[in-house]
Image (cartoon, rainbow, N blue to C red; front, side):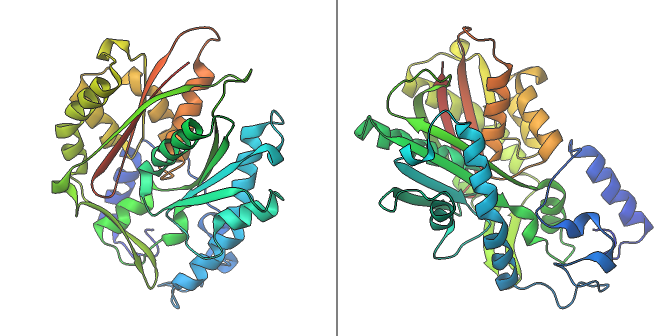
Amino acid sequence: MSRIYAFNEKDRRKLKYLYAKAGISNRYSVLSDYSKRPEEWTFYPPTENLEPFPSLEKRMKAFNRYAPALSVEAIRNCLQNKLPAMEITHLITVTCTGLSAPGLDLHVMELMDLPKNIFRTSVNFMGCYAAIHALKLADSICIAEPSARVMIVCTELCTLHFQQEPSMDNITSSLLFGDGSAAVLVTGKKDKTRGFHLRGFYAEVIPKGKQDMSWALSSTGFAMTLRSYVPGLIEEDFKNLVDNALEKSRISRDGVSDWCIHPGGRKILEAIEKSLGLPREKLAAGYGVLKDFGNMSSPTILFVLDKLFKSFTKGEPHTVFGAAFGPGLTMETFIAGN
């Protein structure tokens, strides 16, 4: 980023400071350019200003090349040979970083040779809270069809959308976001596989934050707006959101044993701590995913849930409150228990 934005020494020091404070140690990308010298680049032109800058068409071509295989890998990792892929009855694909028709759902169906009459749908362009929205859809399907086996796969290639203008929005996006994919299976009937029971969902929109977190198409890729005062808006409203969600599900705050919070950034996690009066260790799973992967948009909350789940001792009761945030400003929550 320092090289492309042609920062002077003062601005380079500022950028290093921002990276050091981000709480992120590792991120991943389907593009190898980010870890290679310019003369080895294959996606970006090895020019000082990246001209000719990659078009939206080139970025979508890369998405269609990498996202389907990554999605299939996530699904197979989720199934772990415990359920034959042919027994999946519903497929929900989630993404906000690549759009086309035929889309990701059809590509996954073809690669996995899933039944041609499988129910499929897509959750697109909802951003970081989209996985919870997909869980809500899957839960409704399973209530209506108890025999349903709904596969959700969230795949985001955020690093395809690097922008060459050194605005604060672009700088913030480029230091936070990485690529990732996660899958989760939702079933209408209990089986012998360990998992969570979905107990409720609740969502609210903060209208005053409508323009402060947004995601829009441009000729050079998808452009993000992410204002620095978004954590303040979340801190101000999150406690009321939690109280309303718990009241709807008839659960007390004391009844929540674990917090599955989307790590949109270090400041957002800190805002949640302040809003709820939680000690930092209660959000350890979120901080851990942020450190190891950065913000991957929609898959991130599933990474946090997986990290929590793997830390539980078999047989111990747990009630998990999950929340994620996205454009709107939208706050989506779920409650799950074992």
